[in-house]
Length: 96
Image (cartoon, rainbow, N blue to C red; front, side, top):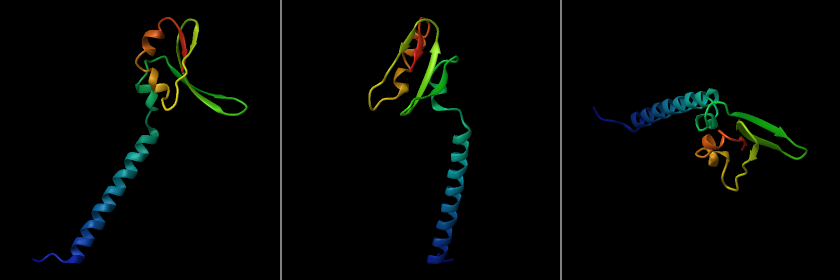
């Protein structure tokens, strides 16, 4: 049996439709998954959105003791602190 151009186009369209459906399923799963920061910081840390007059600041807060504001520079994010936060949180309340 000889493969025609039409057969190739139909097979390609079917493969594309399957990939599109799979991508939509993974996108829906990502929306229901936990935020990325939760997997990077120990339990007990929490996320807060702090509204100011000009912006909304996203922060992760955790630990106990005197507060320490940990401010990252561009282009980093709060994930910058993931490796040192667990140790510092033993003695300080971290605001990242």
